[in-house]
Amino acid sequence: MLNKTIVALFHRDVRVAQRELKYFFIRVGLQPLLFTFIFGYVMPRQGIVSRGYSDILLPGILALSMTLSAMQAVALPLVMDFGFTKEIEDRLLAPIGINGVALEKVAVGMLQGLLAGLVVLPLAWLLMGHNVALQFARPFLLIGVSLLTGWLFAAFGLTLGTIAEPQQIGLVFNVILSPMIFFGCAYYPWAALHVIPWFQRAVLINPLVYASEGYRAALTSELPHMPLWGIFAGLVGFSLFFTLFGLRQFDRRAID
Image 1: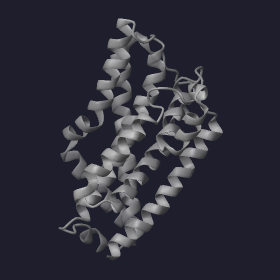
Image 2 (image 1 turned 90 degrees about the vertical axis):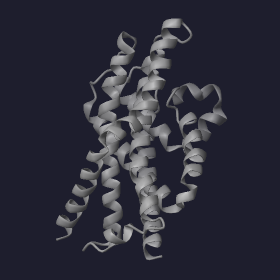
Image 3 (image 1 turned 135 degrees about the vertical axis):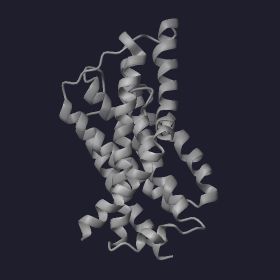
Image 4 (image 1 turned 180 degrees about the vertical axis):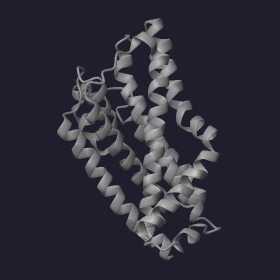
């Protein structure tokens, strides 16, 4: 009964997402592809940045697209569900525990994050053309980083969706997302920050750093990147933290 209930809830969320598929592609693809076009296509042709910069940029763009998609897929619906209409109560009536409802939300966020990666990666690669040379010699590392990235930011979305009020969600996203994006090593490699040691250590509190570096290790392994043990320690550690904290917050909001 438990498995059937989770599958039914998951199927419902997937069907809802299918109806908004065109908006999904706009939401997850617009900003990453604009950055790709300017920094990976226009600026290299102007000689403003080296052509090798595209190899550094694309893994970060991929991490960023998955981050935004997985996080928004969980946080925004939760904020509305916990809003004045209390639509979350319909889900809590299902024959499943409160944590099961929350984990199903995380699973949907993971799926949308992975889908965003599958959409953005080939489009960005085509857009950059011959300026980028990716390697797919480490497929298991790529799959592992993708699954952990989807889990991490879906759990982060669970946390945001359960601590923010509907009228605050815009402010929360602005306050959290902008620093996370610019300090998340999406547009520059973490290894290169050794010239600013204090900053290199400070950005380690940013979960996006580990996703960006994970994709660099998987797709451009010949370039400097964070050690694999550091990447997986960060991804797994933040995933567990946000999952446990998000479940506690979800349980508190559901009982209220």
